[in-house]
Image (cartoon, rainbow, N blue to C red; front, side):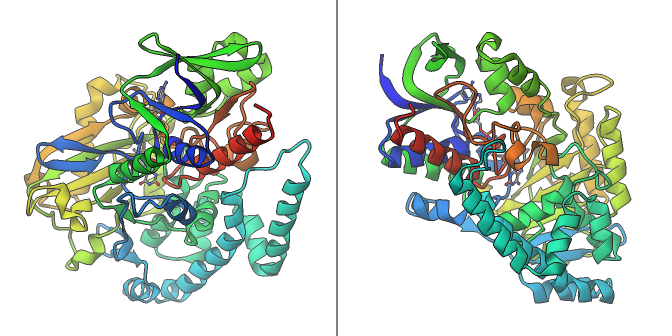
Length: 528
Ligand SMILES: Cc1cc2nc3c(=O)[nH]c(=O)nc-3n(C[C@H](O)[C@H](O)[C@H](O)COP(=O)(O)OP(=O)(O)OC[C@H]3O[C@@H](n4cnc5c(N)ncnc54)[C@H](O)[C@@H]3O)c2cc1C
């Protein structure tokens, strides 16, 4: 039996980031990925001969800059593409609003619709940038122990507290007031134009079983600012699609000595004398190590891979109540040409995300359907056309379109996802065709990924794109559970490193890097 210091269950981008840092610290690491392709939700797959698409995530979180630098990812082939636009919010009356990376260009776009909103936008951007800067050091920190915070944790929190006070009263109060607010209220405090309010609110509800009027949805904007300095999602992608990000991480991990095995699942985590002992693979092979870290989501890790008898009953009950009911699906299209959009003439506006959901009420109604067990007849959609900035993904002149569709609840009241797949995709395309009249005639092929596919093919419990809701009760020191937010599981030698841990979902690499730091500490202090 080969012996390793540590086994990493899952070759998602966080598992790979962890593998890089653990190997860099001199540990002998083995990554075991159940799919033939590594990357988890960061993959590029062929959806039709000659057409390649980031089948799940289509923009980076962004990946934290220190990770790109530490792991020398550019040398391993990573090329980030940052398009001109963050997002174009489409409106049926062609009152489209484009948020660019450049504030002046954004103001030109907003001014055409509302002079008042154009006046407020720079203050909105700057306020979130200042608050985000204060919160940013929490992204790369291990959440403190609630019961007995260590001296180091108290010191770090103290430092955050001091910079928080330096924000001044206005921003400090804003932060405290905004976090629990419904994002619809927050957007309405800043802007009068519905399309702009809805584009802003989108970050608060992305991937969440929540609508813009749900309490706490403003947290998404604060957190995005902490990660990126801006409340609206970034649109940067990777040349070659998200799979190229995972490939660069694989190369970096292998260069540091990690081994990666794909195409075989871990079936069981074995515990002996209250300690991790080995993993048993689907093919019956058993591999031992001193520790194991799971990149799989918390429900998979604790409820599927461990024997319930190995867990304390209170812990078991809490993890059974961990909320991870997904609401997202994808429709990926191979297109013979570039679709036109009503009222758009400048191609640069389509280079980032395309937001469908022109009003707050539209988004809330889209959520209503999910609450009652159905997909939205008029869904919120977040779309990219990656071939505009990366033409190599499709044959010359052709395009791929990645359509993220919300709300698509994991549990349908009527029928099931396999029987409703095609009508669901038809509905999404019909909705989009209201904005793009020639879309349908350009479709060469389509791929539909339902929440059930997210679970069965991609291993996401409940089809939840973030490995579990990112609501205030499952956030920071509560992620995945209060008392268990420091990447250590309730069994010696068992750790977590996926999006179900702080700083949560998105292609940031944060959970993988933070978990690796804690594991290396335990190896060094001979706790393992
Ligand atoms: C449809 C969709 C759209 C998204 N859009 C965006 C976006 O545009 N921007 C963004 O930043 N984020 C987006 N996200 C979120 C982001 O992709 C995820 O948060 C992130 O990829 C999760 O990374 P991870 O490494 O934590 O987990 P995963 O990528 O889920 O990786 C976990 C890995 O573990 C493997 N695994 C599970 N069980 C086992 C087992 N028993 N044995 C071996 N291997 C196992 C899985 O196969 C998988 O490869 C999206 C996600 C989805 C699903």
